[in-house]
Image 1 (cartoon, rainbow, N blue to C red):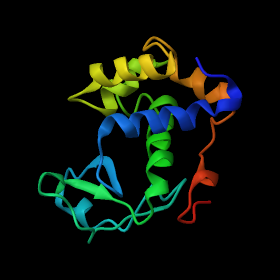
Image 2: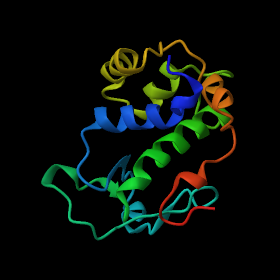
Image 3: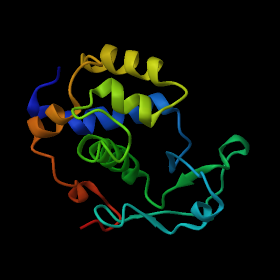
Image 4: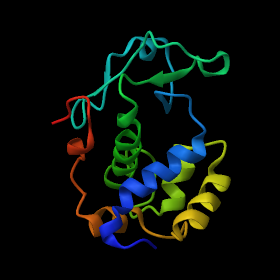
Amino acid sequence: MPDKEENILGLLGSTIEQHEGLEAKQTPFRITNPGMAKWQTMFDDTLKVILDPLAKKGKSRQNFLYVKNQEDVVPMIIEQLRRYAYNNKEWGLPDNPTLGDVIRKFDQTGAEDKLKFIEEQMKIPATTYIKDLFEREGSATPIGSMLTSGGR
């Protein structure tokens, strides 16, 4: 497992982003209803990420949200993991979800490969409690300071 000084959450977010194989400014967040396609922002209560609903999207990427600033993708991933960790009941997760639990919720089609990639790249096993990663880094609170698009 990386040292605390290596910003474990930033590395985790970057590792997840790398495994996703995203286009420029694409997020891993799917548009799941017609209203989402018009969203201008996301995570308004914490990060306030500016989205780009008019972004040019690849043919197979039409159902994904895109951001105005590429640098906002990793903080968005971390924020979603934080929400899974601390609002676990809302997401149907156990009381103290593991990294494996939250990745399976985050990526419902490629979770096992993603978990293997995280373990290979970061030496973090899927059985690690996700709250431990946030508390180790002192990031149980929202991470708006990581944003470039004007988070809190």
